[in-house]
Every structure is written in C-alpha cells, then in structure tokens.
Length: 166
Image: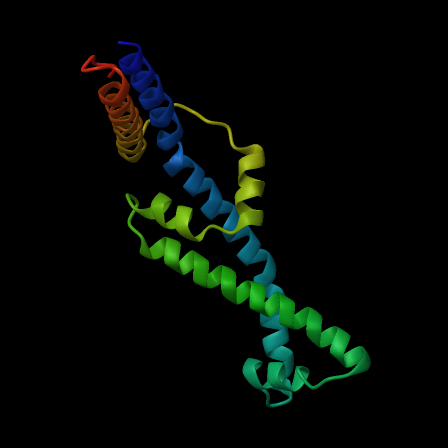
C-alpha cells in the first residue's frame, strides 16, 4: 500500500514536470531566435565586407587562420561570432524540423547549456492547456508510476515473502 502511494506521488510529480516540456521548449526557441537575430547583422556585415575584397566567408576565415597581431585579434572575434551563429542556426533548424510532439525530446538531446540556463532562470511553470502539455504530463505520470511500481514490486518480492508493496 505504501509503495503504491509513493508510485502515485512519483507519477504525479513527473506528470507536472513533463507537462512543462512544451512550454519550456517554446521559450527556449524564442530565446534562441533572439540570439540568432542578435548575431545575424554582425555576420551579414562581415560577409558584405569580405565580399568587397572578392572573398567568401570561407576564404576569409581561412586567411584569418594565418593572421598575426591586430588582424589576428580582429579575426578571432569574427571567427567566434560566425561559428556561434552557424551553430545556433543549425540548432534552430533541427528544432524546427521536429514535430511539435517531438520538439521537447529533440531539445533534451541537443540543448545549449547557456540558453537553457537563461530560459530556466525566468521560466514559470504553469498548468498546461495544450494537447502536447497534457500528453507529456500523462507520459510523465505513467513513467513515474510504473518505475516505482516495478521497484517496489521487486523489493516486495525479494524481501516481503510474497507481500505486495506496489
């Protein structure tokens, strides 16, 4: 009986946590979009400037790798910005390619720590009012309830002499 109660509590806790996945993912995508939008003009300006000298982004970056002194300092800043921009754009493409149902799972595998921490610092859990939130909540409940039911079932079988704990 006690095991079943703990399983229900764990299921409810995981239901609440999992139901937040879609809303957190939406806020993560908004934050990611802002970061991309912030870097885009810098990268576009870099591309325009190197094009004036008949360079592509790739050839300019290759030449930057051999630069020294002040040029090296300037190049390293642009290299960092361009690499971050390209990485964030690819990350956004992966999230956008996922369906609304699988996007939280894709995010869980591929999140960027600094963005996730930024979103989490202002995230306010709320009751989900979307089908995705309800589905993730139900999945979380089942996962928590089944996991603890199995653990207490095994525990009861090993130590309880046939008594049921879950």
